[in-house]
Figure 1 (cartoon, rainbow, N blue to C red):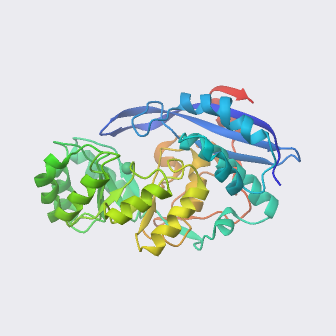
Figure 2: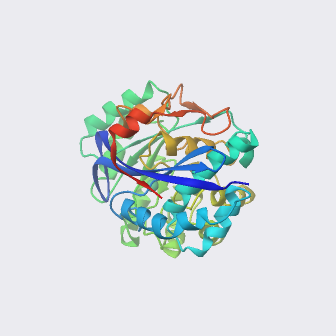
Figure 3: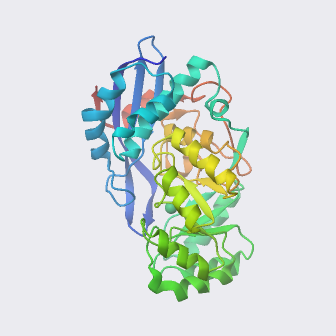
Length: 368
Ligand code: MG
């Protein structure tokens, strides 16, 4: 049983090493929220609520996370003993959406549960890999020379897959310049919903560049339009923003709206829901990969654990800590060797929280 005694939230403001641009905006600072849970018997667990400061990726923000945690999630969490993190995840479904807020708490419960069970989180969810293949994301940029230079720099770490962000008028020109220089680079693009079916001719032309996939070309709720688009292009569509739950994944697979799915465990509400989506995709032979949220080392370790499951056959957006941060809030930081990251072998997160660094980034903390 897990009985939570104390909860502390740490709202952090981390400077990104370099500004990160998507089709929806530019970030220089990453605001994020770390959840610390302490049980009545003194075990401590950490999770990260990974929504952004503005609601462009999903409807959640750091402020909505804090509000719903205070008002609803934490009082419910402290109100009863939990047999497991999944018991909590299934019971909290009375709260609609707020998936990133729920997931931050569920992550911390997995950290505690794995210490209690003296097993790794990967073992508890049926993970099979000791190390995972990882890829890297490059922010949106007009500067093709700079993009090529970044790819060269990242190649020394052996990243298995390269992703660039695109939007209208910053797409084919950039893709074709990369392809001229790197004809066989494992390359994919992410549009973050920047296109509509009116762009179908352009999207068809992208087939010639042999992209691994095009991620979320159309809107979040455009399951039907994605189905139509997939019938017209040979590049596999990967859905990201559209998939918030097992039911969304089932809808997308049934309609054939995509051929690949990216899971961000925060977006789907936690590890329990991620495992359900994993099992569904395995049954339907839909390849998976783990997406990134410009998260700190706390969220990153949970993402690495998820990627240890068998159906995550495509390298995820899980880079080394040093890609984003001068100093991460965990010790040791996440490192990449030959395009691989090791899955923790110890119960819990397998790393320590760097409290001094946490306090250096701290905006404020809230005890609940
Ligand atoms: Mg994406």
